[in-house]
Image (cartoon, rainbow, N blue to C red):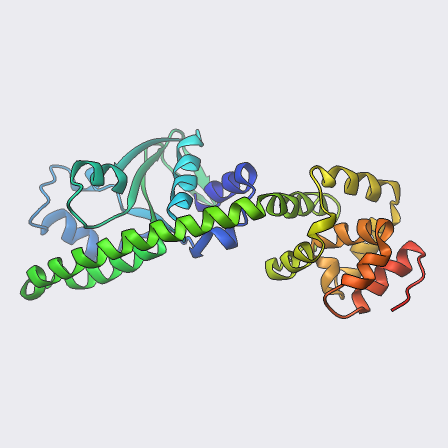
Length: 302
């Protein structure tokens, strides 16, 4: 399930899951004792048919950095058509209903597969419920603290007051983080899209990709003045006109770091078209650059 959602986001939003998710999204199955407690002993629950009515027997949680990232995952869940979706809890809706209350914040979905699904050798029957939680990292920290204290009746009242005050701070911090992200994204959207497109193209002929975001972004930032809209089309045309470049990338990708990065495609293009400026601006050791010059039959002067 997590892989289905992440694949959808990667395809439609051009996002790197490693950047989006702050904590690995690992499916979990509710422990038997926890299931029995919720079914038969929780004072606030009154199930007629506990096994069918308890919907979080299986679940997965997505923890992201920004509130807008929560929306990205929400949209992916609602767009995927292999399950029926119901939203069990939405912190934005709760805030509209009770604007003065600062409390538990999270988005909860219940999804039920429309058809039987086979996972390994197990058949998951149609209409099996699974809970999906989506939170920001700050909300997750609040939830962890809340969960560890609120079941201790001796400290409930004092804890509730203190936690409510902390949630007000968390909400403000989430808003400030989002403002920072908006400014940065306006500056970097073109370059993020370029890195995504380079990655997609690289994967069409070599499967030895191992993306180091900081390294790729450093190179893009160094040569940002030479980038332009739709440069990816020119890069693809250039690489396709010199088929040996693909073979070189495959051969060297095992031993040379830059040849495992999508940015290698941009560097071949820039060396061919802006060789003097590349030599002048190159931000790291020249060993990797020399491979490219040699491959293109260009004299290397550094």
